[in-house]
Image (cartoon, rainbow, N blue to C red; front, side, top):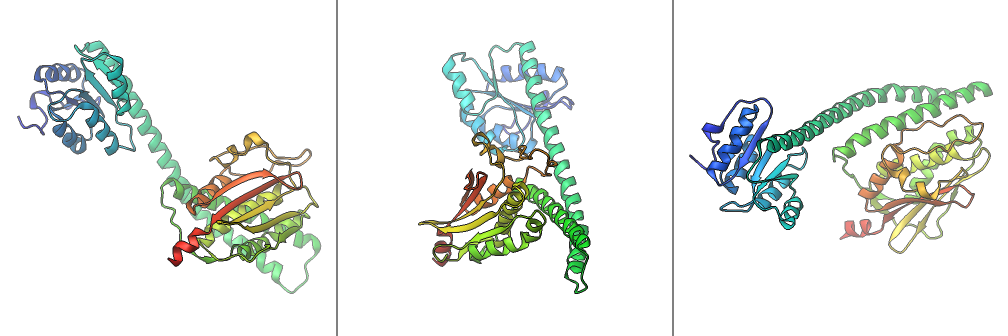
Length: 383
């Protein structure tokens, strides 16, 4: 029998799952295979490490039963290699060992093993441990399918929503820009519609970016950008929302002229837009929101200071996690809508640029959000 072929005597078309049995002892290998075959498992055999790795890659088993002592490579190393080759879906590895000492067990778990069975093998224990490991694998596979289905659904729905939302914004902008004077109430209504359309557009962008981040497909498209000018553009775009809430947006000019950074402008605009809209949304009516930039020794820092209720110290890391939300609604005001994705995506975008984002106490008893972008990006580009 070839070392890289399944043992014909132990093969089965069982429907419970496919198990790779690796042991250099023919009698043990056949005994274990017979027990599993009788329980309707499909069996593949290998008698050394090389055959095990070959069959693991070719046959995609659902579980591996692996002897520690093999003639070519020990089971610990094979276990570690299997782990490297199957990073996504959980592939259970149960070690078959005649060693019952603590050191051997710890070595196996350190190599990535999920369980162990001591020889001589008890049929009841073998089947029980195999069933538990396969349940875990099947549960993870189900969760991965559900996650993929959810992401696919969100991608389709959010993509299809972008056009109608853009049309709503365009109609509002057209009516607001007409020379014919509008009644104050009509103008206010159009501003409200526009503000809510902008919020919906941000929500769509958050869901799209969340899927892109999860798949690892978010790619930077950097250009030379003056961050202080980018901030001014974002503030100007947020002014209709701030005027509606009677909040003044104040941009503090930098103390020193900022050098251009090599960044993805669209993505950093999304970060600033999110922080500005949050600041306006949570600030007290009539209080200013202050924004500005600082040139530091090795980075440019952007800050946005709101007049809201602030962020409790024990929540300042939590708010940047995916799906996190805290109640910042003031007494007597309706709840503010949100996705729990904005700050999570902001952190990822800033992190992709080599920077960081955080929140601290603001100067107006609210929160001051800051993020930094390293100057080295521009130097790296020039060299």
